[in-house]
Image 1 (cartoon, rainbow, N blue to C red):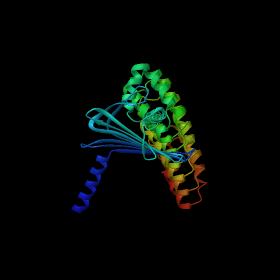
Image 2 (image 1 turned 60 degrees about the horizontal axis):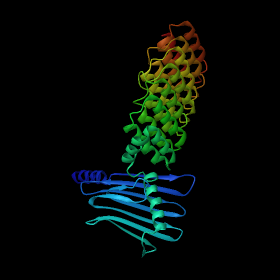
Image 3 (image 1 turned 180 degrees about the vertical axis):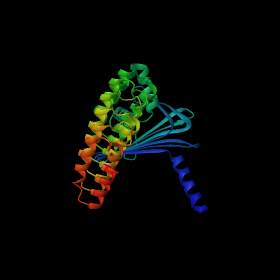
Length: 385
């Protein structure tokens, strides 16, 4: 047992030392990008590997590398053992470039198909493109770059640069840095959110940005509306549910926004994710009569009898349920196929509203539709006990 525990601990320490890695695949082509950042007490190493039908590009940076403003060259490498190594295979031609720190400054070497060459105009043009791709496609040194962009053009300059970046992951990195450094006002934050919803296709990356923004800006009603509109562009049930649940905080939404969430829940096809979202709504917000009816309508789109019952029972567990809600629930219970789930829901309504004559009559009528004598008897007993 001790050996297994020590082995698990060693594995965790290994992962902590290795750092972070991100792999993305462009669905519109056969392009794959892998970014790694390794950080420990011995070295700080960053790798970027991009592969598609024509190119196999690898960039490795140790330590810290600084570039010229136009990314045509390297201006500094730290610490003393820092380096930049590039290897690109394109169309049968392999180019390599290395830059290391020496006593005399930065030492540069360049080769084509294994043959050493001077870094001529053609080589410099190639290097400029590689260095631009390293920051704009690989995401190297994003915090420093966002700082420079903010100094030169403010948040608008960063947003303009994000539009030029390639890849959802890299865009998300820059959006996160903008949110961290930019001290955005509500209008700019809303513009950033709308741009993220428009330019990022990955549901995961989009949700990461939305959830990061959910905490700081939700007091502004126009931002809340933009947030919910952005969340509605997410296709994945899980990610859309995650984005909606992130915004379900007390005092974060007004009635119109919450109605939008309830109506938008119909876009979630997963019964489990939809029920999870609705249950979260009842735990956070007091629902007035209009919201309760909208809630029941949303729950009716759940196909699973169990999940539908779970969602509606969470509403009935609140103190705000009233006659209109009880009658809507009884009407919805008729659509359930499972006699057991139908009985469970009707019994729950009976516990709360059987003293109301209209509710009691509706319950009795609904009970007649239960095929199982046992389940029908349970409901009638709950109504008239």
